[in-house]
Structures are given as structure tokens and as C-alpha cells.
Image 1 (cartoon, rainbow, N blue to C red):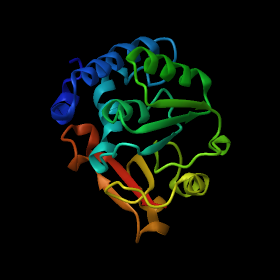
Image 2 (cartoon, rainbow, N blue to C red):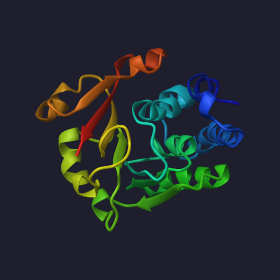
Image 3 (cartoon, one colour):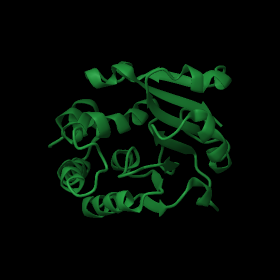
Length: 210
């Protein structure tokens, strides 16, 4: 397996086919990034930890049950949705982004990896209609105070996972200002408690039930 750190944290739950899919991600993202800048060119060498493992932090907070519906807002080239879709093949992921060329990267990688539980939508979050989701996930897309009004209508009530349905965001630095108005309901986890790599020392996961 090309992604040795993924094996370190998630190897016990991976099938051979999932390992092969992660290998496709390890191969194709650098190839695509040379043509379409979905990850900073200076950071593509850190693909496994800074992007794939970072995306999988959500799995450490909530291991999605089969049948869970997840919307990835502002997915770019497929983060966090594509790594999560590999890890949870019985969860359905809908990836949304306004930049078509980045979605084309995700589409090609999904196709070549044989990831069957992902759909893609080019457009704004306001164009997502006629569906409800258990969770909306995102990675450093926008301020929580701007995001909540946009996604609240898309989250269904209830749910069967270990936490109620809601919003899960991956962010860095001080998030106290963003979470202040939800201080009694939001959960903020330091990713350094999930993973030991130095990259995670300043990274957070924010969960907000909606």
C-alpha cells in the first residue's frame, strides 16, 4: 500500500479493494495536480497526511453507518469526500463545488478507482435541491456563521449514527469566534488527539447538531 500512514490508523478496517483504491488516489492526485492545481504545488508531497488523512479525521469522530447520506460542501478535487467514500463504501456521498475543473479531477479519480458511492454536482450549495442529508461535511470552506444558514435546510432530522445529524467542519487555528453562538451545542475536537503527526497540532474538527 502506497499510503503507509493510512494503514497505520485505519489498516485494521481496510479490505484489499479499499487499499487498492487508496493506491489509485496516491498515484492519480499528483498526476492530476501537475495539470490542475487542486492542492498547492508546494504541498502535493504531503498528500497522504495533509489531505487524505486530514479528511479521514471525520471518520474518527463519527464512523458512518451504512445508508448514511453525506454532502461534501466545497469539495474541490474531492476532499474530504473521496477518502471518506473509500473508507465507508456503504455510505453515500454527494460532492458539490463551483469550480468545474476541480470536479473533473475528482470525477476521473472516482472513476479510475471504481468508487461507486459518490455523486458529483457542479454549482452552488443553493442549487442542491430535492434531497436531505444526515451530515454536511467541509474542509476549510467558509466561516461557520456563514455556512450554517446555507446548509441547515439540507440536513434531515434524527439519524442513526453515534451523534445526531448535523454539520462537521475541518478547520485550523482559533475557531472560538466562529463557534461562540453555538458554544452550548458545538463540539470542538483537537485533531492532535486523533493523530500524532505534527501537521495536526493546530487542526480542529467542529461538529454542530442541526
